[in-house]
Image 1 (tube, rainbow, N blue to C red):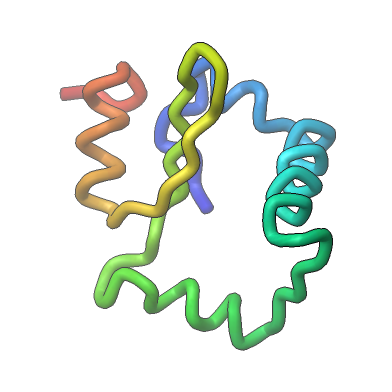
Image 2: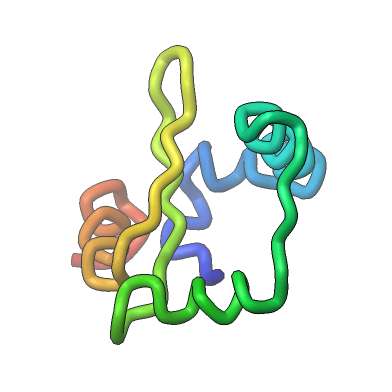
Length: 86
């Protein structure tokens, strides 16, 4: 997935070590086990219909919000937060 706002502090935190910890927390929240198949990767590509989903990370004082949005909303959010030119 492309990074639309690579200079944003939350995006910069998403390095390999942090992503590993983030995945571990998500697996913990899912009950300690998660299985991802090739079919899941294919389904991800069509999850938003005609637009590939974009992972948005939004930092809050005590949490990080993760959500999938379509490309149009992702570009709008990136512009709003300084990642893309207006």
